[in-house]
Image (cartoon, rainbow, N blue to C red; front, side, top):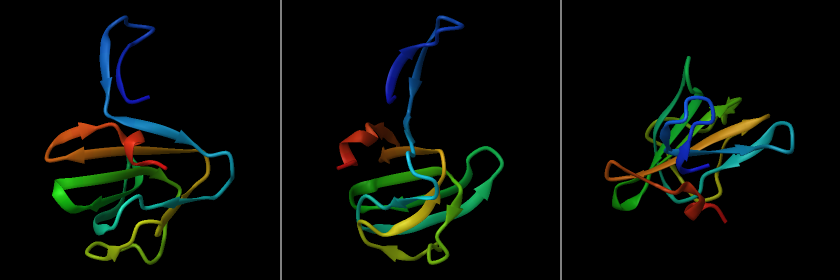
Length: 110
């Protein structure tokens, strides 16, 4: 869930910058939410497979914990809204920033 919540164990307020979207289908397609340009498509030990797409007006969408990145998704490639960027089996982490501020990712999901 995006936003501030109280940690149930430590009883401290935490701001969650992303949303976790659970897949109900194995190997589910993950689609880009807006036209843009891929600025990162890589793997890392914490976020696993990650794709970052840059859009107009300083907006960036971040897709992490992908099980696979689509073979056509490469840094520098322009992609359209609805393009398949990868696949996920269990859970996708989705985050949106605009000019270094986090915004609620659910505003971009239709």
